[in-house]
Structure formats: C-alpha cells, structure tokens
Image 1 (tube, rainbow, N blue to C red):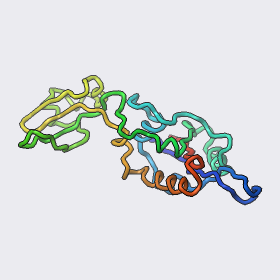
Image 2 (tube, helix red, strand yellow):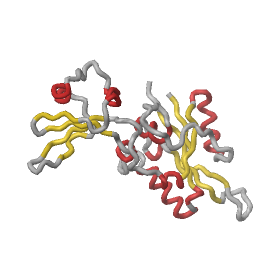
Image 3 (tube, rainbow, N blue to C red):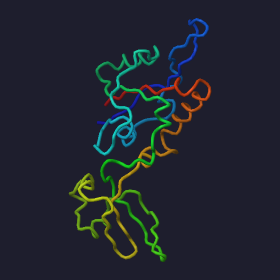
Image 4 (spheres, rainbow, N blue to C red):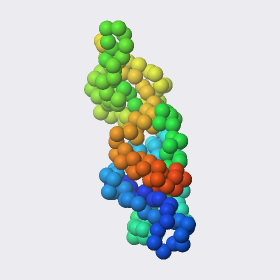
Length: 208
C-alpha cells in the first residue's frame, strides 16, 4: 500500500470579502498541480512520514493551522479518517533548512571508481548489488539494505579500482533541488517575493 501527499501552497493576502488592509490565508495552488506525488525519502526527511529513523523531520504532525484556507479545510475534511500526518511548513522554515545536514545514521553504500591519481569518482550514490556482495561478504539477497546503519560511517570495501563506502545521505540528496519539490519551492519563493516570507506556507496531509 502506497502513501500519497495532498495539500496546498497557501498565501496570506487580501481577497474578496475582506476589508481593505485585512488579509487571510488563501489556497494558491495544489501540490498535485505541482507534480508532487509519492516521494518517500522526502516525506521522511521533511515530515517524518514513512519514517526510517534516519532524519530529524522539519515539520511533523503539526496539525492543520486554525487559520488555514477554506479550500484546504474543505479538501482535508473530504478525506476524513483516511488522512493522517496533517502538518504545515512555512517558507521561512524552508529557507532556513540546512540542505547539507547529514542523516542521523549511515544510510547507504556508495560506489566509487578510484582514478589513477587516487581520487574517487562517484559511480552510484546508493548500491545494494552483487558486486557489493562479492566484496563485502554480505548476502544482499537475504540481508535488508537497512542493515547499513550497523556499519560505521566511512567503512570501506575495495576490489581493484572499485570502492564501496558507507555514507550518510544529506537532506540535499533525498530532496534534490531539481527533483519533485523544485516546483513547490519555486512557487513559494515567488509568492514570498510578492507578499513576504512570513505570508507563504505549505499545508499538507497524507493518505494510504
């Protein structure tokens, strides 16, 4: 069973029905229109959903803001008890994320090629292959990749010019700037430029 995300980028601004000078949170665009679907690594890293225990989530289970837009409230209500992990994330918080922050524990085995000058060239960010099995003695057909956390960061296995190294992913690795979330950050950044950093947020929830 898969987990999907739903929600809206919201902006606090004036809208029809308000007095001049007043503002309220309005739904600007849905996440589905921005192409955000199932991205489990990001769900874990940002919201603590489908958690691996590898990350300190940025915005987990905060609930729906009391002043959420009527559209967001109505859409969430339609999901009923199927919705969980309701939360929100402000643009100010997004801009403060340290994308180079590593995971709390080792997360993956990376494969490198050792060059003639002894420097390493990345081949695969994360592998769990027969090649790794032969070098490490680990039966990758029966051992869960989650066992990576049992090794110390920096543990290496070498075979010729191939090097396998235990590493910790960074937030940038699991939420890459050119990935699913690029469109979300772009919209939020644009709205913040117009309305202010404190007037833009993401409201989200999940369902399986």
